[in-house]
Image (cartoon, rainbow, N blue to C red; front, side):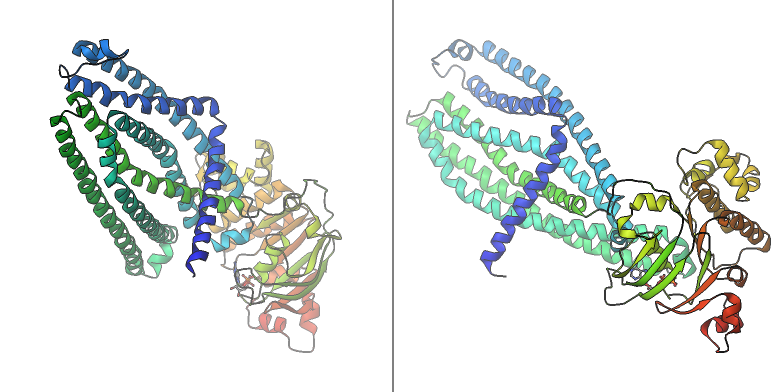
Length: 596
Ligand code: ADP
């Protein structure tokens, strides 16, 4: 890339970064009543710390000088000087206490607001976004980036203000004390500053790399833990350990590289900066000898010079932290800028349950070149039962995803009650569609809460009633804690059939017009199967139902069966119709080979 172009790109990125940082400061300004006084206090304590070298200088040089001006009475007596010193320290200490409390209070509240907004935004994003971003990566990113922003708000910004105030104040002080000596001191500084800036940039780049590597290593841990049973059943522990080691090695490499750069940087600062101060002391003592500088002014000068040097030495690190924090705000802003799902005004018109699908075509945004659904046409009248059969990968689940508006079709349309899905409020529509999936996900919590997920706000009686209809009441009551039994990752493990009946109870509670059933491929034991079937029969009464079917018993009762192959409907009809077809079609093959 030509340098000019890169520079302007860098500048644009920097501006963008600052804008994102401001956006996060917006959260802080909600707490301005606490934050602004704290910020003011920060300036005050920083300015007060400049009194320290002044009074200390007077104390050290005591007896050697004749002070003039209004401070003379204080500076001329070591008792008064130390008293003044203690007064300044007391004020500083008290203000610092309130300042830090204020910063933490406003900062933590602002961060909690930001975290909440991020999550609120995250759940509005379309399903496609979550397909493209791994769960571990997302949650890691949010927590590590927010951690960096916390460091920036609570540590780096105060440091930045303190060091800048001390630097500027210290520079003014040394010039007032002796212009000649100050100029000599500054003779060395521009070189240092320049080198500091170059190094700082390099270190920043390296630490960003290290962060990315660490995130990759965390993803491995997360994926392995989540899929631990697959890992074990394939005896792939060693593979995962290797995978983790590899990404960890990457992290260690780049973090060591960053560490080396930082170490070199610090030793450089120590030598050059403090070496410069030693040179200044040598030059200054010459001035004292020749009588052009008082010993009192000289000791004060040295103390200020040390302050200036220390601040200057810290600033690059502070800048590094600041830009890390700004990088974090930028990444989170990218997340906040992701376009949420279409949110129409929430009109909740009840559906009758008619479905028309016309010429539907679709490819996943992540793989636009592979067509998954191609010219799908079908219609379902209210209350009908329609089955979709076909081999794995034919596109049945994809069709269900589109029916729920998780993705937008590339071609053709889906209409409910004659209204295109694009014109329907997504939330309202989804409230009238229930899905009973193959693999039911239970949340950590009680069975009661898990069923209530179907309709938040349902009463306990309604929940029990739904459980009865779903043939779930009995097994729930058989647990010692009944409906209060904890399920989910840390609770009681339920069998596949039991989980399905919970899902059915959820759906009964939701009372939708349209049902999407994804029949389990894995066989349940016959008792459980019977209970699930019975519950499903009850659930389906009076509702339009689409079923991804794997069992002959299910399709026999359907009003219409569509056979999907490679994203196309290749045969349609009732079971009898399709079986009586003189031509040996896909359906007949499926039935004869007992694939159905
Ligand atoms: P079925 O339910 O009939 O088994 P699917 O609808 O699950 O079929 O899958 C159809 C095709 O779409 C498969 O080739 C699968 O690899 C692909 N597919 C499924 N989900 C995604 C996704 N999120 N991103 C990209 N491709 C996908």
